[in-house]
Amino acid sequence: HLSKLPNIETTIFTVMSGLANKHKAINLSQGFPNFKGDQKLIDLVSKAMNSGYNQYALMPGNMQLREAIAKKFDLLYGSSYHPESEITITAGATQAIYDVITAFVRADDEVIILKPAYDCYEPSIRINGGKPVSIQLEAPNYQVDWNEVAQKMSSKTKMIIINTPHNPSGTIFSEADMLKLQELTKNSNIIVLSDEVYEHIVFDGEKHQSVCLFPDLKSRSFITASFGKTFHNTGWKTGYCCAPKELMEEFQKIHQFNVFSVNHPVQKGLADYMQDPNTYLGLSEFFQAKRDLFLNLIKDSRFQFKPSQGTYFQVLDYSKITQEYDVDYAKRLTIENGLASIPLSVFNENKLDNKVLRFCFAKTDETLKQAADILNNI
Ligand code: PMP
Ligand code: GLN
Image (cartoon, rainbow, N blue to C red; front, side, top):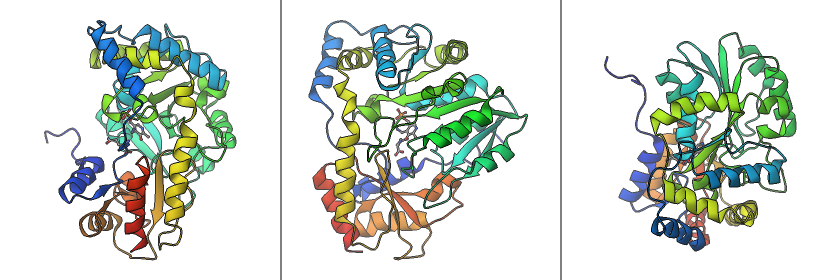
């Protein structure tokens, strides 16, 4: 067999956005805003291009941007990452995740993932010969059973991947979750990959639990992050990752040959923009207003929900409406009702069908009202 990933199909994001476009449906499937980001940032990127930032950036990324990121960690978490040696700018969080896994996972190593899991983790593990070991997060609360994690840890466990706020469920880890993870990994060589792309989108006054707040956890962790999610420009595919120096050195061995460095004018524009921390501080309020608008509009519909605690996704349970397989229902909703979403079973190897769909509310109020009209009429 020639394929290294025989069981991997086209991602659900390509499938559902394609179907939405074909049927001119409202697209609440793939996670991206349908409004423009701040004009000031666009102007700063354009200025960077016009003032000569058009050749390779340094391998780990533009220094001014790494310094701005270090400042952010200090300001928000009182945690220090050295801009010289502990931060690397990447082509979105996706490339950072791939490189972290590639840098450490060898054939037959086990990697614990929490399902439903964002779809790029598992193929990245498998392409490196590793074995994903799944822990199920049960609907509707999607809480981690840390006893099960402890049972599934073994001498083969190389890495644990966590993601808070969590895509697709919209749940967040508590401090107790983080302490439990810290306790379980203490005195081990296990690496934690903490996917924190939604760190700035946490609702109802809750606090984002970054691994960097827990010193022992921080010492073994990579954080991956995405400017696309934070500044409403997913198409720029710019993100970063940070880790203690010895771990970052291994990461950069892969990064330098995978991509070497990423889009320089975008990095320079982001660096100038982030000089003002207010550019990323108001995001939770902004998206909470959208979540509240959307949920208020559909509160009398037949869809059941617990409000999202973070991310810009809301999951809706449709079991009162139909018992169809979630992938079939998501497609029918797109084709017949004109509204695209993401079925949750795709984050669970198409197996566990809880009759739940994920809707992205990073949309204009107008779009959210149109989507709510459709849901209310079902
Ligand atoms: N992790 C999660 C949980 C995501 O939702 C996404 C999508 N933004 C990514 C990683 C990838 O981020 P990026 O688009 O920056 O590659
Ligand atoms: N992260 C986005 C989501 O969960 C999509 C990213 C992609 O299209 N690969 O919808």
